[in-house]
Length: 132
Image (spheres, rainbow, N blue to C red):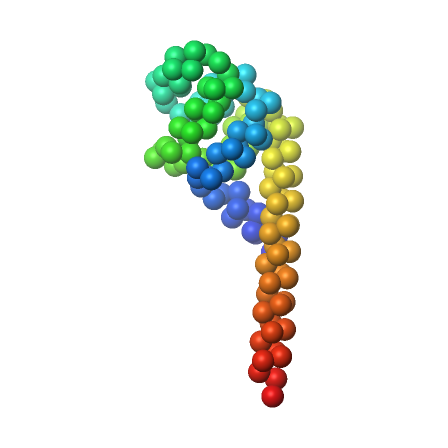
């Protein structure tokens, strides 16, 4: 069950709420922002605009590229597409992708425990209420 939830969670389109988390998770690869952007199907023209507008400062370019990908209409950004881009031969950051996947699994485990606790609590409450 957790594996199926992890697959669904990894394929969820990231939103502006995920922006800071994505940036924090990928900051160590900021010098590769352009290659990551290409692997995320960001048009080269958009990457060049990002490069110029941020004066080629890699941290700012990474932020802008993530923002572009999250807001993009070409499929959007998911944890899976991000990890796939990091694992690509052009980027070659499989260890970072593995760390993100591990973080996703731990985060999902925490959430599933909360859901499990809530469902048990609701079932116990229901049983006490209607056991007559």
